[in-house]
Length: 225
Length: 225
Image 1 (tube, rainbow over the protein chains, first blue to last red):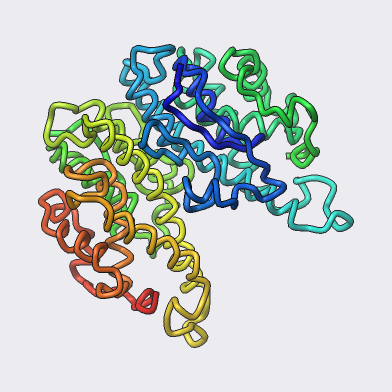
Image 2: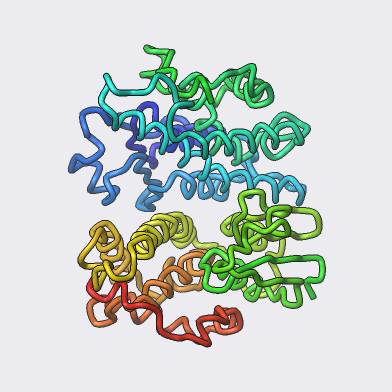
């Protein structure tokens, strides 16, 4: 039981989801946690700001060690609980290199996705183009094609090869979000197969964003990408 | 001799500098390398694009393992050459947590710095405000204050505590760049002390951007921050 850990989180945030998947993979259930609403701007509340002065979620603590950056928390958890739960850093040097490379590239995919979503929400509803294809999604499209290509070339079914690794922990929540916004499964078959295959992985199922369970279909922002 | 490694890089790029510092720290000298000019847009050349389809530098290879993301390259090098050169991941759990946290937060500091520099270069010369204080640098100012605070609280002189770690490898080039753009040393004494103390570290001295040696003073974009 991970009673010495505390996670402040928000539903539907890929960075929060990453940490929750890592905790499940390392058999670190039973941690203290509290959900905050982004809609109500609770991530800027005093309670969050006290733990994370940037007013962002997740905010994560193990004892008095603060790990608010989701990537930092994932790397730390794997390092400190190496022999507990699933091993998330492969031994094979080729897979190891691929894991770090995909994991860090995942930040670019995530940022490009966020840029498109932010662009969509900024425009008043009546003026919104009907799909991402009609606005500044070119850079996201190029990026998604790159990842489809990666999965075409990688055998083994995971981002770094044959084993589920920190690359999947960190990037899967972003890929999931992109499909939630209705990326076309037929147009990106390898990404779609990856997305569907991992849906039922126990760590992912156990930490599925609760607001997405209630409301399973997102806006179709990305349907024409 | 690291003859099975190849680095394509550009002078004055913090991401390139990170990888070069890590290579020095791990005693991996003698790698193949080639410098490209950002001014001449050589990072979009076929030679770079072939190794890094995003057309970004660094592009780094160890044998046939590609590690174009600077953070990925640094993590990989430390993992694969643990007992060679300087150890860059501390054993102490508190320092380890701090190392990952500062390292990943460093990406935010870097992005906010880049935003201010990009904003400066976008404006035609005759219309440029005379300092960053006059434009959108508020978010960079808040960020820099955060880091000054971190160094006030951390004893030991390095970002994660008593030992030079991957956090310093990854964040120092950004802090150096900020001071190159004339951040006021008196206003941020802890950051300035850190900046000055590490200047003479052998790995940093050996990899100092050559165009900065020729031209030691940058524009005074950040003097009023």
